[in-house]
Image 1: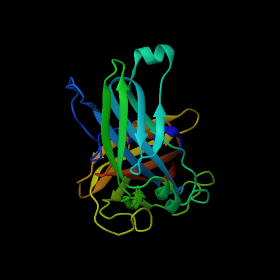
Image 2: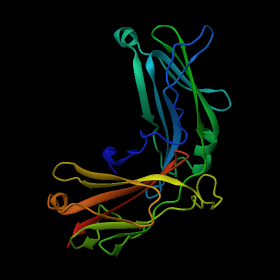
Image 3: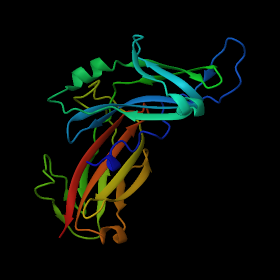
Length: 259
């Protein structure tokens, strides 16, 4: 789906984030990052995986991320006026090739689980340091998804035909309680969801987005999309994103049209 719908839960603080207040370091000591997290995002509908990272610290002019085996996977160094100004927050998403081009096994071999080390240098010359843990434990996608009582259609081509629904538009799903049975560490173990995000898009003639965040501990999920938003279009796409407490998140996408 569009970038507006993709990776929207990447920035909130997750269990993998390192949250330590900045302080003036003693001689020979480094300053801890304000925030550091790495995560994997799965689009279960399209079949692709991406690597995301979020880093926040006081103004810096150098930053490096190393994987658990010590290899540098990212090195950032602003130049000239931007280096003098300094950067503070860095968020990125990797490309997300489809599984035909990069299988889940190849993705997780490329990004091993464990502690990723982030180091940097402030514009005053002090050392920054933090760590974030990447898990291969992925949440399953939301289950029993329905729009106004119309069940989700598997392998639906939204560019061809969207299921017809009546108003009011109510999107519902069952809580995610298990890990993904096939992707990542397929143990079918219990998994804790930190939060969900529901995003509904109207793409034509211009992009409009309705989104809502929900806590991960509710027994049922049933969201009525405001009639004022539905009145703005006839066909819509939606995404349900489940974010686990380990930071990883799994998206499910589909569409509907008004009958």
